[in-house]
Every structure is written in structure tokens, then in C-alpha cells.
Image (cartoon, rainbow, N blue to C red):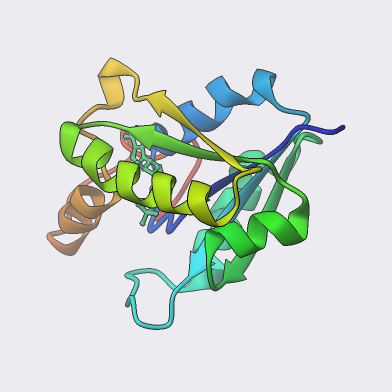
Length: 152
Ligand code: ADP
């Protein structure tokens, strides 16, 4: 059976932290679906097309990675894609508390799916999309926080 994992997120925008988790997780799976979850109620800074374009630019050439979007529950997307792993990154204890609830409730709904957590690499522990957005709002340079070649 193919080991398919979903890495869900907003990627608003993608950061080097996301990139690092994706690269480190790749050897574990046959296929990794990097998926932008669309949530009608959550207003994003960048439109879906731009966020999708950056993911394709960074990972589009790797045959093990598929870029996708979905709406609704992540767990239902996993079911449709026959993915049995959800990949998430952990930076802080707040991330852990948040993820624990979601992970455990997902497990109750769909026991076949395991959530796999990657501890954030030390150098990216403080890198977050929300701080990148703040820097951008004030005209700062974010190049060191986003993957090489990404122009924002
Ligand atoms: P969401 O809105 O679902 O949290 P994000 O795009 O912010 O989506 O994050 C997607 C995943 O990447 C989450 O598991 C998040 O914890 C993880 N992540 C975000 N930033 C980093 C980072 N700097 N290092 C490791 N993981 C990260």
C-alpha cells in the first residue's frame, strides 16, 4: 500500500519553516500532498492563486509531491485521496496544545489516519507566516524567511 501523506496549511505565504518540514518528511512517504485548505470564513492575505503558484514553484518538479487545494475537513480530503497520514509541524507548546485536540478528534473520526508531527528545525522556530505578513505590511524584506526564489 502506498504511504500517502497530506501536509495541510494556509501557506499565506509559504515560509522556509514549511519548506523544511516538507523536505524532512519526504523520505517517510511515497507521496506527499501539500494542500491548501480553503476556509470561506478565514480571510487570507494572499489570494489562493498566488499561494498555489508559490507551492508549485518550490515543489512542482518533485514527482513525490503533489500540490492541491480542498475545502471542508482535512480528514475528508485525506479519505478522498486515500492518504493515511497527516503531517504537521510543531514550533511551540501552543502549537502542541492546538494540534493535540485536532489530532485526537481526527483520530476518533477516522482511526486509519495517523497525524505525524515534525519538530520544527531550530533555525526556523520563530518563522511564521503571520510575522512574514506583518513585515510585508510595513514594507520589510522577507527574503530570508521564504523559500529561495520566491518573489513576494
Ligand atoms: P495553518 O493555518 O493550518 O496552521 P500554516 O500554513 O500556518 O497553516 O501551517 C501549516 C503547518 O506548518 C502547520 O502544521 C504549522 O505548525 C507548520 N509550520 C508553520 N511554520 C512552521 C515552521 N517555521 N517550522 C515548522 N513548521 C511550521
